[in-house]
Image (cartoon, rainbow, N blue to C red; front, side, top):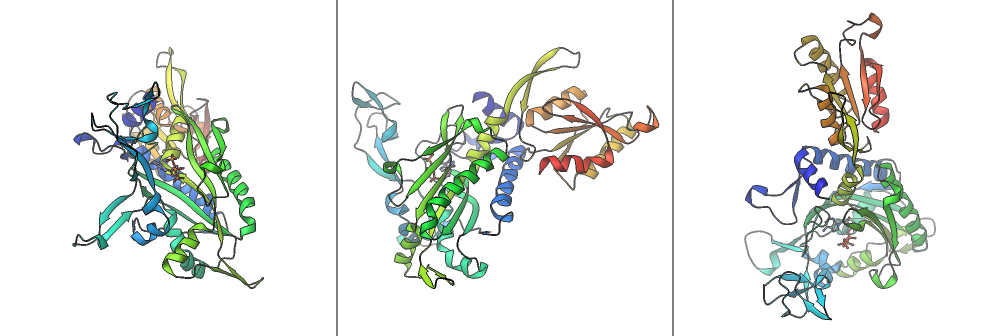
Length: 444
Ligand code: ATP
């Protein structure tokens, strides 16, 4: 994990937020490569979950949330962790994370035994709307994206003219005042979710739960996460939310242990019913064929963007060996990202920076590829070093413009380049005009 955290900083995937002021605990900034990786992940999720389907539409709800919404959903009253204070060192601790010695609870910080009883601590961030400070002006930063989907259910149903089963998808920020942010970005206080609420008839719920579990596992495989590090936990009834008839956690084997990436839950009609009760508005569905009116049930695959980015990084990290400039074998760090999510798809290298014709041709190749993918131009240093820098950030393809390209080693090689594969390190000679098609077909 240490190697991964240090690579993330060194190469610009993830930085600690407000680092120059000592850092803001549990909050992270994504650097130039991190934002590309994250965007690629979100775009692929949106493609698979929305664009490729007839039965899902999107929503982008607000982060600031009316307290009544979160009162109805149960978050105001029950979205809590039990907390204990250590009277000796004043640390505030999660009750389930206390140390225990000979059956006596201890503070894991100072070893003190003078601890308070456990009290519920609400994980939501509160803020104040407008200038007045009265309690009526409280708003919350949403703790999940799902609630705006439920609250907008009727509006979306009316405008999209969808019939059950159909879903509403959303990607966006969520905020939780986690007591113990830890394991790098895994448990953060500000994070992003990718959520689908898939509405259905009550009798379809259990089948759709199984269906979405399968779909979601396939998604992780399609972005390059190895199946053997993915696990499915069938959450036992006593650990599920009381309204859920079935929940699966999709877990990933992180270097710090097996942890949840996504929850796939059959939530019955709980959320819509709660909002019907609290708002007095009809959030029901009229089935034209059967002439029935009822409140739809919902299956929810809810994934974390940041946790998936972290899993992508952990899964991609590899070390092998490659020859250096003098042919001596050295350790190579290589991020084996699936080309679909890799931050940069293709790097373009003129063999020498001081040969104008090579540089001009390389710039031409860059302009040719740029409309199709994110490319990176690099003319600095020995070619082997340039390859290594790209391997370390997971760029799947490298194109080198050399004297053959200029036609100086025979007319038949004019306007051809070497295309290098990151994983096999093999190089093949291909015509420049074939590059866009050849690479595009591998990064979609
Ligand atoms: P955990 O038990 O790990 O706190 P959870 O079961 O509370 O997670 P959900 O409420 O089901 O999580 O949220 C859905 C998804 O949102 C999670 O699977 C995870 O990917 C993501 N998520 C939740 N909390 C955090 C967090 N603090 N930091 C990063 N991602 C999070």
